[in-house]
Image 1 (cartoon, rainbow, N blue to C red):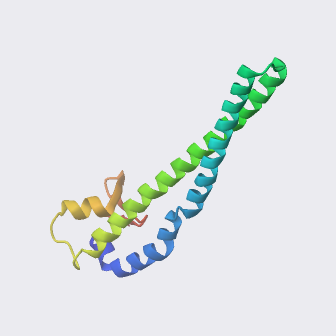
Image 2 (cartoon, helix red, strand yellow; image 1 turned 90 degrees about the vertical axis):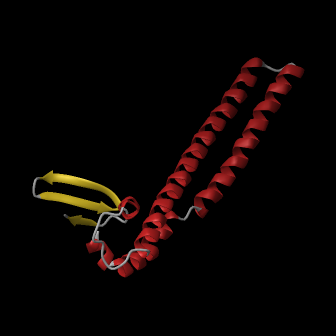
Image 3 (tube, rainbow, N blue to C red; image 1 turned 45 degrees about the horizontal axis):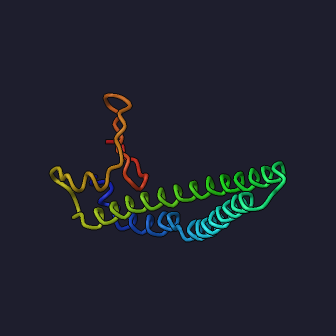
Length: 147
């Protein structure tokens, strides 16, 4: 962790400049808003055709074709919406993790002389043991250090 702390100003600047824009969700949110409108419009259209079929004598083959086409479009649009929502959620979670990393790193002194649980949890993503003499610590910003 001291290897990371020695470079903390550079790491913070690099992460803020390069990684944080990656987590911007404004384009996805705009797409989500449009998909929400589309889903609502399609749901209304399905309800309208069901109502029409219940109140007006329609050719049932034609009705079924229209109904199937609308519900297929609805399902396709809903699937896209669900995917966009998952992407937004993923970016928000990853952004929160990086922000925690930055907050923890910026609060660290020049070196750590004893184990600090908050620093460990806030900075370290995972450890990989390749062998007895090859242990690597990967920090939340992606930096890997051989321990």
